[in-house]
Image (tube, rainbow, N blue to C red):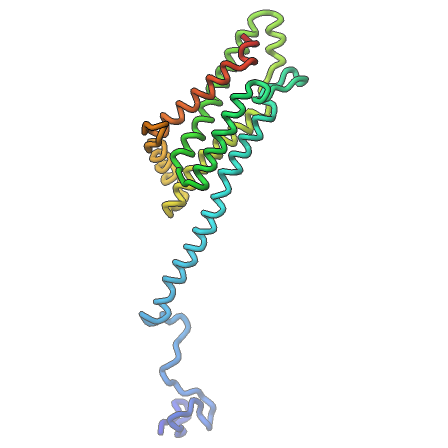
Length: 247
């Protein structure tokens, strides 16, 4: 027999409440609020549960990132059918008008980059193709500026040059190329299970830019691959009828 700690009345061994005063007997089994679970009980299940939750989040994030290259490639493809140069807001010039070969080259590279990133997981190749678009856009812009400067030397040329301006298609192209490059870095970072921190992303970009990729049967750094593709696109642009007319 045990006694009630409050009133001293005798209690049965299995009784949890005093029959006289109703006080609960302290059995030592109840835990106070905030008590840490014993090692090997609930604590053993907390780590796997947290790991599973994080793994699920990572899987969702990777699935969402897989669609990004397609969206970026679609922007680049749409840009070749939209005006890049406006002639006095009366005539618009698209890449399709400039050169059919250049148009097909841009579309082919954009599709290949999206496939390399989303399906083949060749992030260095995807980044190289994206960088080739950026390099081509920069070279084409300087070429455009030099042609406009030559055109403005005469009086009539100055009037014509003042009416020529870049249009929104060029902006869509550059935006799509930059997004494709960012997609490459983000996908490579996610594949390694690393967080999207600026220092990690920059390090990943440097790593991908110097990684060896195959050009025909030769292995070259990704940055050299970018230069070769950009030079090919610029060559097609230089041989376009618009370039010949403005010269």
